[in-house]
Length: 422
Image 1 (tube, rainbow, N blue to C red):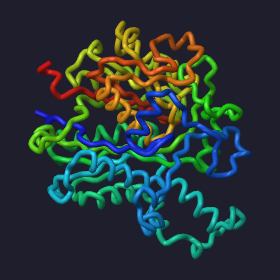
Image 2 (tube, rainbow, N blue to C red):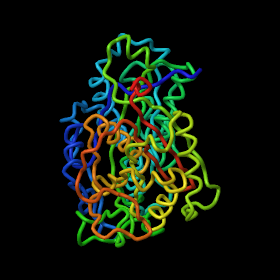
Image 3 (cartoon, rainbow, N blue to C red):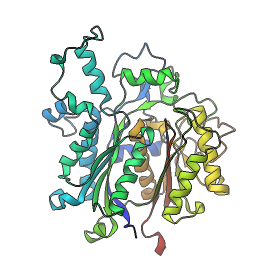
Image 4 (cartoon, rainbow, N blue to C red):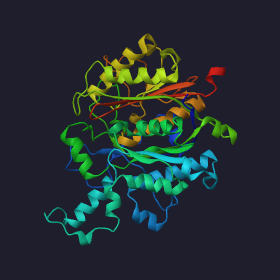
């Protein structure tokens, strides 16, 4: 029988504030952290808004050599890891290195550093044959996303399984799901799992401009992200990281650890349909939800809150609404659902883990965060999407879902580990 996996520590770096407290306060207040891009001159682009983090790596505890060596996404992951380990109360020196693993998600890796270094070695794009002598000595580490997992492993001395999971916008869910599976199958007792992305760079903005996936609402950045609203016209790019300490349940209980939630069920599916398109019936996401609930041994009626993907694109929000109706039946009309992307933007591979952090905090505080900027609900998105204001709501079980380009559809079920005794 598969071993049970729980979360005993979490760390979050998200737009609007550093750390769990600032993150949760922003969500509960329904504030948005979206603004015009400040990292570079975005005036040539169609979409000029993003959700940026006011992050000073040295103030966050990274040394000058670490700052020089690591891409911004790796820096966010390392700081979030330190937060999560401290929050868990676990002592890295007391861990069995061979039984400690890492599972880190990222959609676009070291995009910011690669973009910057290309500009340097090509002299601003002038030279077709680039001059490698101008590159930083750590360029290879930027090129291979596996360097992120190595950086996190070094933080805790992990010598067990270590991997970067890159499945686009579901990476943050899939990395946690993979980490839980490592513990469940007996390959590890503790896994540092989560995701990071820092994609706010010219190349990323240009890519999403090309497919018109991001919003052109540049005149009102604070209200640009509008999931499930009739006036939505694309997502707002973001950045961030969330990292968790996952433990086998008895391992956590033996040391008296506080438990945020059990990773009760996880499933992922692909639609094998289109790189960016989605079928309107939501059948693949519905199947991922069904399997995740089956693995958790829960009924759709047991779900107290759904943390939606809710990107704010026309087709995603319709697709997701259909998937909830298909998988949850009549309960889909009773359960509160919300999208925190309305407040912290869409940080690509990182957002799934950031949304899991929000889900665990919703369970801790029995409060459902709102969907900001939802003033005029789309008639096709006719479920309870918790508009504008956070809602007190007893929450023991959360379903969190993600949808990614390439057709990836993932679902994670979080539950209280003592639910069977309740």
